[in-house]
Length: 344
Image (cartoon, rainbow, N blue to C red):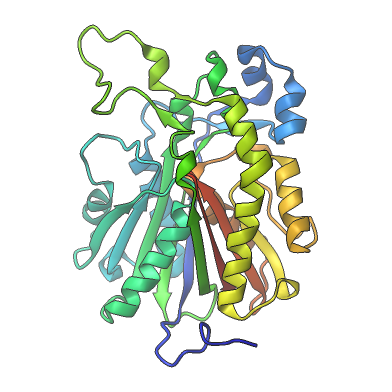
């Protein structure tokens, strides 16, 4: 077995020592969304596989939700803010304010006085990426003992069931997840990482208005451009011809880099996608279909937080026994794919 990645002499050994999650209390049912979009309910409940999404209230934002998840992760790890050396805030980029750093606000609110803080954006693959960025910085800077990765988004604010071009992404919901990575922690160690981006899909998902090309200024009235509109045919092509191949590709590459084979993997933790696609991924890896955690039904898809959110749920339910192997996999806006092999 090739163990060059897992056992190289100078490898940084770090694992997840604490998990935190947060979802708004307000829920929207698939029935409501189907009615407003004027589409069959079965397209959402059976085709995609969700019954509800959670929607942030007017006083819930990426930062406020992420902060609550971070507090829970610190408590779970038995740490206080003063002990955190690195803070990474992950989202799709639609923060509470424009031209603002939510990671710096986390440092202030949690008292992480010795921490370095910054943001990561890689769509829904961002949480996975940020954990590996933290690992890389730990390898470069031996003073980093504890890193806090926070993922939070209010995706329902860029989706409207009344706009036909939003129909492919009506399963987007709001929520947050956070993890603490601790040097020399023996559980949930990141053994390898693989990634890939298909630049041809870069414009598949975007909000037209609010950037420098179409600023919102006096006289603006094209409010449908403030939502994420999707070419449904192009989206279907992505799913049918590209998505599965790329997803399986990065998972297999991560396995190769860890010296582990798919038959050794006990569990897959992934961003939440429609039923049929999830089944194809599990079958493509030769892993039993029920060896993954499905949060889609109750929470929908919550962006970069998804794979860490499902990992936290699986951890709390005792589904990830110590020493077993898992894959943390995600796809994201851009379009990008990433995968990490983890020893539980």
